[in-house]
Image (tube, rainbow, N blue to C red):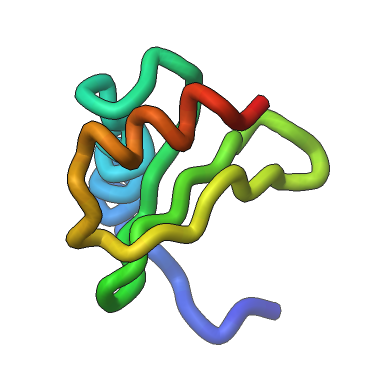
Length: 73
């Protein structure tokens, strides 16, 4: 049994957040991004197991981030 329950609107909120974690300014790959403190984590949500492509400082130049992501498969 779970220690919490979600209101139906909260589920919708989570779905919208999930869809909004793409960064088309950094890559056209189907990646998602999450910020944790000062880190930017890029991951491929459809891969099993989950594939984390990069863990970068969030203040890096976006062009450098985009370049690093292009190099990784």
